[in-house]
Length: 152
Image (cartoon, rainbow, N blue to C red; front, side, top):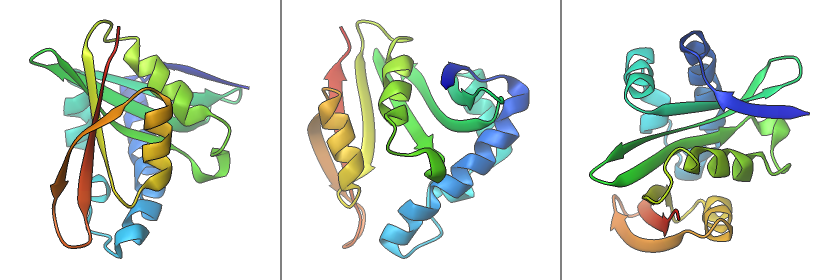
């Protein structure tokens, strides 16, 4: 069994290591290991922790196997870094993490982004009620897909 709760400051190094592991598959999609989630520092994560909400998904043994974070700005909740350890995927944990982080921002517009190559992510977000609101071409291989939903 697993539970989702707010991360604590001392959890951040473990969450960052999980992020580095989880985003290897994203890097492989683009053939580029120089993507922002793989370059993020502990200081940057600590800043996000201090200015938003960071949740963790933990097993009964208190092993962190997933995480998501969000912050609000100008009435919009920006959700990011939704990740689940590769050995624990396909159990609905991503959906649970997304649902839990949304609870911190009732009545707000929630926004997140992924890429056109992340078909599974787009499917997950659409199932959770998100709609594509825009796209931004970064390179010939990389197009960001921005998705929104009114959380109310």
